[in-house]
Amino acid sequence: MSEPYRIVVKVLSADGTCDFGHQVDDEILFGGETIQGRVCLRALYSFLPEVFAMRCGAEFPWLDAEHKDAAAHACPDAYNPVVLMRRVREE
Image (tube, rainbow, N blue to C red; front, side, top):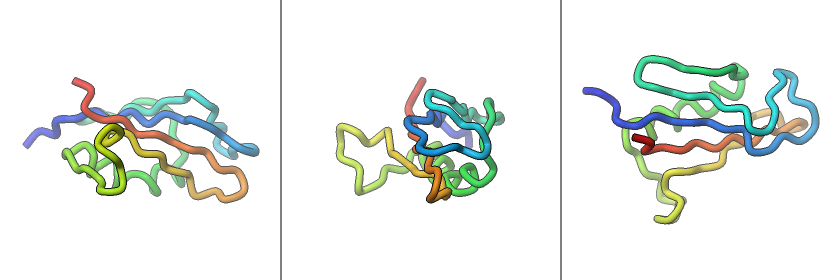
């Protein structure tokens, strides 16, 4: 079974100083067999389950119909949060 959706994770905001060096507008692309871009392992570990679910077409009940393809996700660094957004259904 091929996974139908590519995911783009984009840094929307960064408060404080990200130890990894993420900056606003950085992007990580999740294709069918590849990941393109630099990504902090802590952030990746925290959002990877959602990326996998969204690649397979999952829809989250807390997102309204207008924004069902985008969800904010904060990295786990509470002192220097980086907010990442996932977008799906880019064909």
